[in-house]
Length: 166
Image (cartoon, rainbow, N blue to C red; front, side):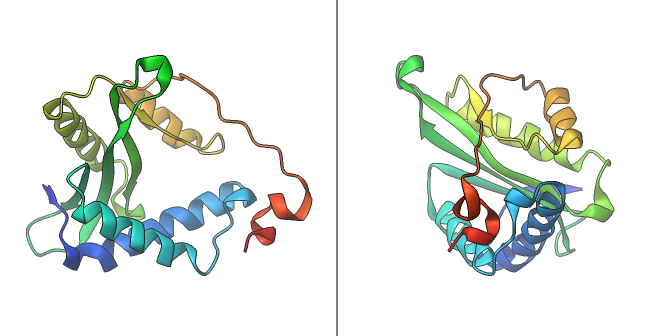
């Protein structure tokens, strides 16, 4: 397996892997409902990350030129006031194609992002993981991540549901 920085020509394959991840999350929790414009929004975000010096987009492939097995996106962000506004790393996305899970690809992507964060002299890395995605929680715990805060949600009728988003 090879890890490398993503390139513009990887966007369609990364988008396919992201779409499968989004659909999986939607099945786990309907609040993650997948809307028709979600993919377009992700592609715009991905392209901006590819251009940004404050982002690292990695892909995994079996060997050069073979289909992508997974991807990860890390970003440098301003930290919260409680951390003295120090810069923190944030892993916004990490996904592996279903057929290639549990083979160490996610771990390799994660460890490579953590290496990049260390090179950027970041002292803390954050991420969000769905409460409904128990396997992902276990994965992140194996990588050394621990609960820090809990983000809570209260749906206020139709506008608070995926069906009510516009």
